[in-house]
Image 1 (cartoon, helix red, strand yellow):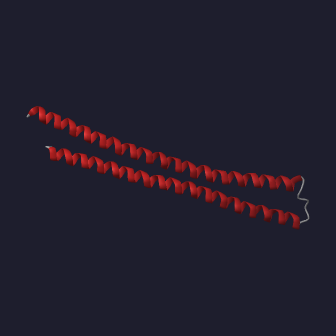
Image 2: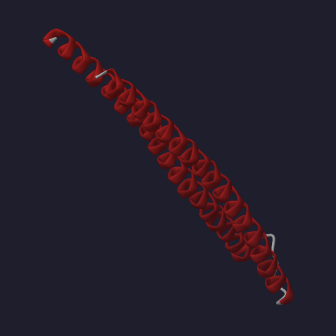
Length: 133
């Protein structure tokens, strides 16, 4: 009976270690998701600056005054829409990363709970077997 108890404890420790490792990998994925969202958002901003430059060049080439009226409104609206797109990239990426991080924490807690349950069940079985002896 003691051998079974030792095996159960070893199994509990092993499952908890596996859950901890899986949780660690998931946290690394969450960090990578955040970094990717930040990179993609900055890339969108870079593309937006290029778009705004092309827009200004096209307007200037046609002889339009850029500092007032419709051309100015067009540039402001384009800049606002592009910044919104960059912010949505960040929001989506960070949201996914937060979800992955929460799943990592849940995985770790589940491993701990499973280990604690195994140890408790083994302890109960040992006590019952000692009482029967």
